[in-house]
Image (cartoon, rainbow, N blue to C red; front, side, top):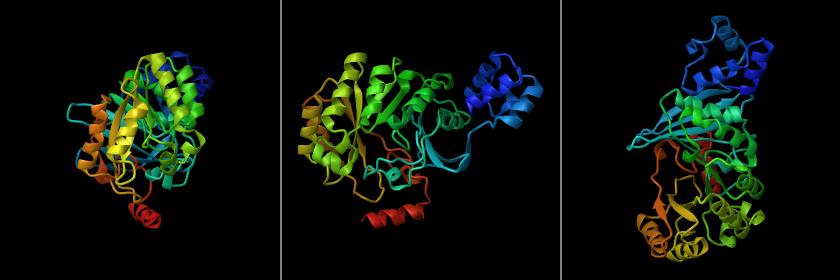
Length: 338
């Protein structure tokens, strides 16, 4: 819900200051609406239902994967599409992938979100309402800001929403903010964030020439500057930075690329997540053998590395696939790219 509107409405009604916290506590625990808030007077519940929408987002569509992953397409009050994902794991984890923007202006070539038109930054309430939608389905305990958009381009709203997540059951240590290396926001994150929120870097190449080709943002903020900030974060917090590396067949996945990545990162400051490429039309994904050979180069040099488990690929909910567009439109865009 729009928490600013909630506080304003309560103040205008002459309600005591604790009412806003009561409403938020019910909402964060997964209440279905104002009627469930039994410690609020009925006239207040009815007044809030009439003046403060319970969510800033409208649910347009929802799909469930064969692996249990749920993808929801939302629409903001002014008509912008947003997708978010609930990932269910066999060990009991329930992880959310939240979006910080409608679309993304940074046009990474492997990402479907970059193919759609950029709308705008989302407010903290719109980001939270993605999480609250899934919290009403079931308890959740992890969150990654890796959905649509670049979180560091919407730094203030992302951090404001992240700081509310513990009320939903997602601690700061189980919250990760990902960036492609947008330096102004990254510097603020390193300087300002005191909570143990995790940092992830979307890297995907170990040299500036290749990275600039597949991620245009690198031409503005090159690797050396971005990695320097990441290492400053490690020195300040003593927490490794996660590195996301999508495996693109014949582009960035050779053993030589793996060796270059190992030399670039070293073994102490980063943990690498190798991501099997999820089809968006521009590349082919690396084979298991190519991924294994790449991983071996990192392991030989004792760089922590895992291969990410792909979730929700069959409903276009996996990493890099969020585009809030009909499948037919996405297929046309992929055909044009080829």
